[in-house]
Length: 381
Ligand SMILES: Cc1ncc(COP(=O)(O)O)c(C=O)c1O
Image: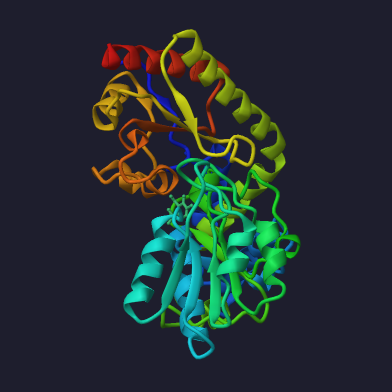
C-alpha cells in the first residue's frame, strides 16, 4: 500500500510528541489523588490547579470556571442537561441548530422526550444561521440557547459574538460547542458573552478522554454525575491529573502556533483545490467560504458514491471521512448536509471531508489531492 496521508484531523489528531513527554512524566510523577490531603495528593492538586489556570487563561476565564470532563461529549451533555434540569421551573424551551454535533442534538432529543420543547434553527446552504433567527425564536420560557462555534463536517463558523450580544437582553443561558474551534480561533468568553463553552483535548493534539466545560461564575447547572466532591462539587470522579497536564501543554502549543497553522491550513485548502482543477474533475466546495474553520474542507465530487469512494481513498492511502466519525461508519446521510441542501440532494452521496493538522506538509497534501483526483476520474469515467 502507498504511504498513508492522514487528513482526518477533525475526527481526531495525533498527540504531539511534547505532549506525550509531559504526560508520561506526569503519569510517573503525579500518581496522587488531587483530593488527598497528604504530600502526594497536594502535589497532584498543585499540578491540576496550574493546568486549570493555564487553560482558563486561553479563554479569558477564571480558573474556577473550568470543569474538567471526559471530553467534548460530556461537556456538551453537562451544559444541556445541567442547564435544563437546573432551570426547568423557569421554562422548558431550548434553541439550537439543525447542524450541531450529536452530543448536542441527541441530548436535546432526549429532553424533548422529557417534556422540553426544542427549536432547531434551519441553516442556509453554507451551513450558517443568522443571529436574527435566534432573536426571532427567543421566548419568555427559553432557558438555553446552544449553538456550535464551528461545524465539524463543513467547517462553517456561526456568528457567536452577535448571538451573545442579542442574549445580553435575555435570561437564557448561552452555550457554545467550541470543540473544533478551540486552539485555532482566538476566543474570549467575555467578548463572546457565552455562559458555557465545551472543549476537547484530542482535537488539539492532546490525549483522548479529557475535556472541559467553561461555566461562567453563577451560571445554574445541575450535576449529571453523582459521587465525590471533585471540581467544586460540579463533576464527581477522581480527576485525571496526567491527562489534564497534557491537555494544558497541548493548548499552550496550539496557542503558540495558531496563526502559523491557520495560514498553513488555508494553503492546504488551496493546494487541494488546485489539484482538483488541474485534473479537470467536477467538484464543488461545501460550507461557508470565509466564515470557516481553516482545518476543514468539505468537497462534493458529483457522480461518486461516498462508501466506495472512501474505500478507494483508503486503499490509495488517503485517510479522510465523509463527515462526523460516527456518521462515516454507517450509511446514514450527514444531518449537516441534509440541513444545508435537503433530503434528496446529490451532495449527501458524494461528499468528503478533508481535515488538516499535525504532521502535514504541502507535499503530502498535494500528493493526497493527486491521488483523490485519480480516483474521482476512475469512479466517474
Ligand atoms: C463539534 C464537536 N462536538 C463534540 C465532539 C465530541 O467530543 P469528544 O470526542 O471529546 O467526546 C466532537 C468530536 O467529534 C465535535 O467535533
